[in-house]
Length: 168
Image (cartoon, rainbow, N blue to C red; front, side, top):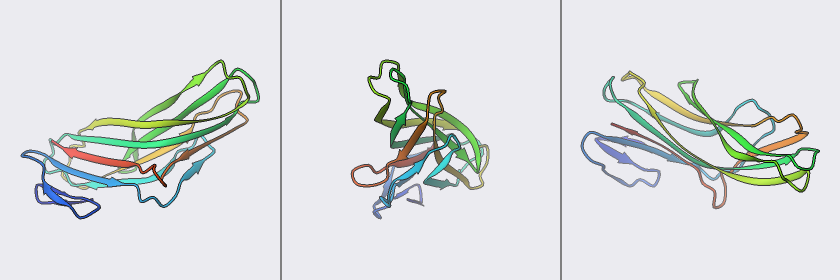
């Protein structure tokens, strides 16, 4: 969405105030298709948002929601890495990284598929009134037994991600 005076303009054009002392920015996934990553190197989800803080002392709350599908071949019955990493970058620099999902030690097969909900909230103080761009990245989690891991960021059908920033 784009910023309106002391309020918001959403992707659908809806506008409105959100209360004194705060500004809200958000963007939804465009539904253009899923993005796949087979490496531990981060790949962009395409989810970016640029904000213009009103004060150098502003606090920004960054929220992301997305769904990730992990296909995993361990080659070994009993081990199953069902995780993926999510990164948040500010102006091209990593400022936050987390791992979602879990490791299942009692898998009955060597090949599994699982879905991870990537929901995170980050409080940031960029100490600037210049434009600040946040972007979300993701990657696979490596495991010693992995022979083939594919992580897919869902941006289609019923799985539309969202990224928002609220300034306080």
